[in-house]
Length: 278
Image 1 (tube, one colour):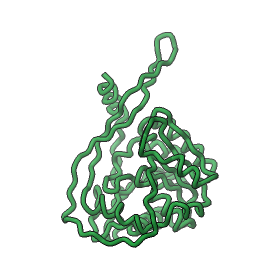
Image 2 (cartoon, helix red, strand yellow):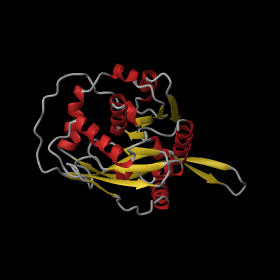
Image 3 (cartoon, helix red, strand yellow):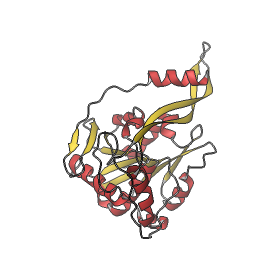
Image 4 (cartoon, helix red, strand yellow):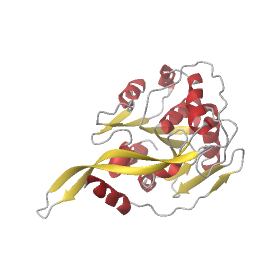
């Protein structure tokens, strides 16, 4: 019964078809999408490493009420081109390319999910001049140790496979007497996972990133979402301690992906954060 309810919710929440806006022509080519014409811009950073952006939609599309929303497929994923290297520094350079193309004269917000949160933090640490604020969800243990990375050769070409993901959620029902009841459900999605170098080299190379205490130098506003369930891959409280001025929002029905469990609530909290820090 819960699975049927979850499927019906997803069917009702199907996003409209937004065409791809274009490619960044430099090597590798990066596919990007942009919604809206607001003066403020948020660049959404997908997880993985090694998936495409589409699984974040339509939930992150809700931010378009407050700002322009930019998605892109990271190198080697989705519609973006494969590359010779997937070390984390290349992802930082790619994000800077996206920022310079789509918001060349104005700072942006970054919204990262899972690995995308790590990318948002390391970018804000290295390029504070580009960023107004960061939104983090699905945070996991920081893997930077400031150690040398020894490159590993991975198989080519890059392979991919479909992988299901799930997240707890709450279905709210309005009864005939006007009361509201809540029922726990499970929400399902499917992502395309790109294996080999796009998935593994990024994570392996992150050992050369700065240690977590270095992030205390990030002085911009930070909004962190955490799950209320017993989620072992949620490190939201750890990062709240790293950024003393950060806002921490716990979504009690969620685990790794609060934006998926409670999309309207997620968007509302993000909207307030964006408005406050324009």
